[in-house]
Length: 267
Ligand code: ZN
Image (cartoon, rainbow, N blue to C red; front, side, top):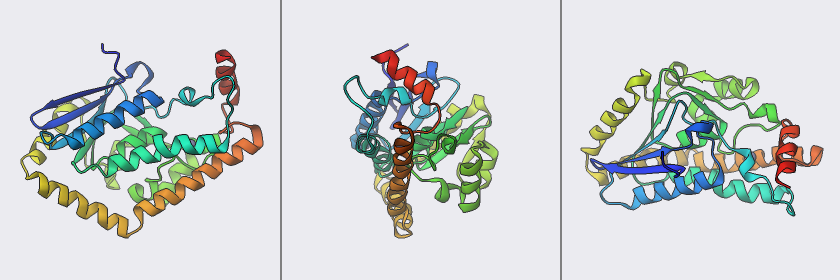
């Protein structure tokens, strides 16, 4: 077992990036996100890499953001500015950067992919899901209108996007496949091999052609307003944090006792 929060490996022109906090379902703390971003950058810049695979070690892809990691230190306090500045870099900033990485990328998702987990999976070009994968964004329960990177409407269509945001329910791999959010659904035992097979097939193509094919689709989405919309909704998300701050002095409306206990235990 490595101490690294993210593992990186290159074989057969495929870079495999592995989230490596299986003991906490790959919850994302700031250090994990910084390591993850460094791996994306390395893969994007390495001429020996043609395809990027993102996967999670253990039973689950990612349980989302580890809120403990962002708690202020003793002499610091939560402010709207602090929340905005952290999330602009670590959440929407990184997700858009990975989305725009010049290399084709594939997320391999098993188990839960909750809230912040979507910020890792959605920026990938393709998603292969195990049959047991479940995708959810339950943050309305915390008084927030959705995670920082608003892929929902683009990935699911407006009706399903609203339904999962309003109810917080998870969608299954099959349901995600039906609306085009994932490319393939495979048995859990086949997730690694099926993802690798797809990556190897893509890696046979000329890297410039792959780069231009990716750019063609992303540019089309951008002409439709994708990046502008995602950035605009990020500010709506911040309004949610701002509302919670005025109500109770913390960035979310529920789980306050836990969060206060966590902060108290640090001081
Ligand atoms: Zn947030």
